[in-house]
Image 1 (cartoon, helix red, strand yellow):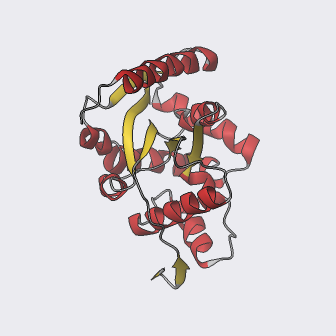
Image 2: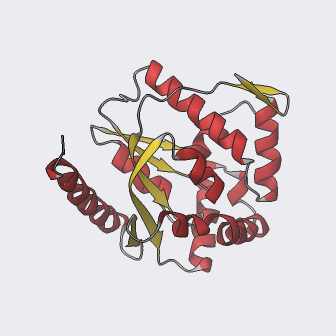
Amino acid sequence: MECYAGFFVFSTYFMHKYPTYLFFGSPGSGKGTHGRILGTIPGFRHLACGDVFRSLDPQSPIGKIFTDNITKGVLMPDNIVIDLWTSTINSMIQNGKFKAETDHLVLDGIPRTVNQAKLLEQFIEVIAVFHLAGASEEELIQRMRKRALKEGRPDDASEEIIRRRLEVYKKETYPVLDYYGTSKITTIETTGTPSEVFALILKHVNEFEKRRVTKPSYA
């Protein structure tokens, strides 16, 4: 157990790296939507880091930090993100929501910095990074404004905050793609309908899974 900013978080011990698909893209790109859908398929377990933070008690120490950061449009500190993530995974394993021996993780909203990607290396085996791209900045803003009305998300309600989040994404999160390299990245154009986009994602997942099953093992 470690202490950050006056609150305690529990680290978990990982016996092996978990096969993982990362959904990556700017705010409003649809990574949460498609990640959730993939997570409904048996053998896949979706975890959105943003949802974990939004589920916290806003009056708790970490909840107050999160509320303060989202109203400014800035990222949470890396150490807090990783510790909360590992604690959440540990809880999911204990309550049976994630079968660590057989399930694949489907992650969105993490990693958001290169440092987070480095810290996650000890926990996950990245099969592929689905980079959701193609929407213009104005389209992304409109999507998030609609999401704010539907879900009541304060980080989507203000255009000023949205534009700040998009700038933070370009400066701090987009370089994560360079960290993983072209061999891991599959770019998904999001200009089609949601069903068309997900069908393309599922096609790639099936191809990746076939390769993993047929990959030769060496004694």
